[in-house]
Length: 77
Image 1 (spheres, one colour):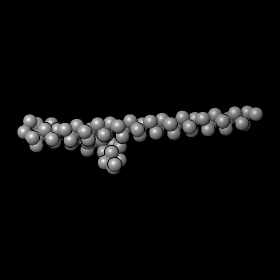
Image 2 (image 1 turned 135 degrees about the vertical axis):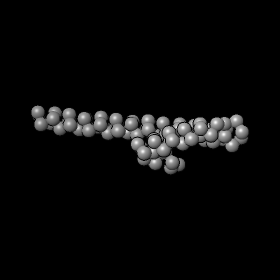
Image 3 (image 1 turned 180 degrees about the vertical axis):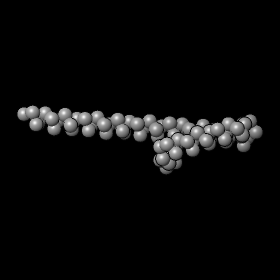
Image 4 (image 1 turned 45 degrees about the vertical axis):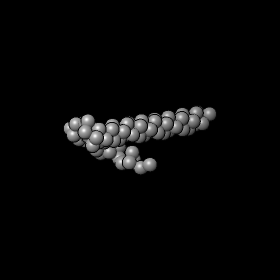
């Protein structure tokens, strides 16, 4: 009986770890999408005369930092 409980506990722990990993990936994907939206808004504002090029550069650097940390999955549709 103890062996069964040990296997069940291990399986539950693996499931929890996988769930956490998927949650972390989803949060990173969402954060990356938000960064891309900010970059697009800054670029649009700059091109239409109302934006600051520094804001566009900062947004681009934030996207690049996110990609360096989490990969380029946010660039795929």
